[in-house]
Length: 105
View 1 (cartoon, rainbow, N blue to C red):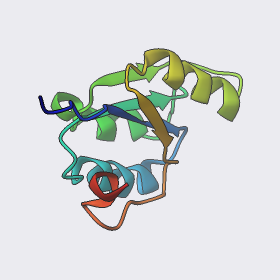
View 2 (view 1 turned 45 degrees about the horizontal axis):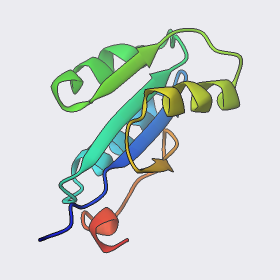
View 3 (view 1 turned 180 degrees about the vertical axis):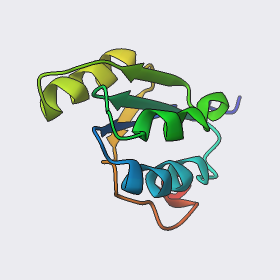
C-alpha cells in the first residue's frame, strides 16, 4: 500500500502590497507538489491588492479579506483556514524560486 503524501497549507498574509503580491502568488502556484493548499489573508487592503488577488480566485483555496489587528492576527486567521498536515508561511513580496521546492522538502 502506497502512503498518501501530506497536504501542505501555504499561507500568505498581505496588506496593501499590490506591487509585491503577484510574484508571491505566481511562485506558490508554480509549485509542482500535488498536495498544496493555498490560503491568502488580506487585511482589507485599499490599494488594489484584493482586485489583483481576485484574478487568481480559481486557483486559491481560501481567501479571507477583513481588517485584522496586525501580522500575527492575520497569521492566526490563516492558520484557522488551513486544513493541511503542515503549514508554510510565505510573506507578500517573498518568492519560492524553484518550482520543486515543496516537492523536495
